[in-house]
View 1 (cartoon, rainbow, N blue to C red):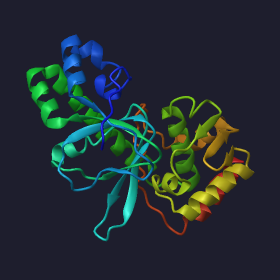
View 2: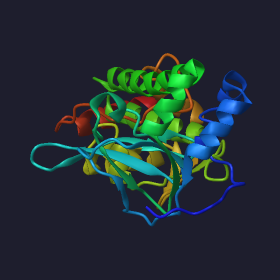
View 3: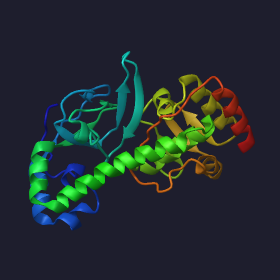
Length: 269
């Protein structure tokens, strides 16, 4: 990726997260500033790194959105998560030494990166930075495990309500508000992230519209009955939601999804 030079631009790579400046102090934050690379924006569909490539850096989204995808032996891809402005990705490669998924821009996207070898050297000098990195990495992994466990065995409407509400919580304004959400991803990717086929996702969107839960036009979603959506999602929400709850969508899909979907949607109406 090409680099640009927005030295005055706010970037998650310069602060790690909201608590890091206070914890790490000015000198360590200045070292981070020197290590951070601000990459020029890239169009939708651009691959930022590929599964199996040697691990070189951790990334964060400055503008836009990224999906992570894992490919099986046959080359078929499964959407694992979505990364939104301010969120890091690539952290799961630290242990493996190579990227364990592929990261793809969902729309015109700009990211920043921190060279991990250089970052690790600084962390060796500053144990507080090492602890912050471990906290970021463990947070991503634990959130993914929570999402896996939470989604398992739940019906399609609950899964879709869960991911729509999670995205609304995580998306920055003006892309999201209490009433509206602009999806940076296709509905097929959205559904796959919670273990649903495109057909089931389309069917549940239709049911949500008919029951007065949402109005959806293209990638714009307007929330009409948030209380009922929250009731659907409540049973599968992770116990401790955070801003970077992974949208990991592992879960089983079967021909029975459609029947469970209809039953749950009707029950909520």
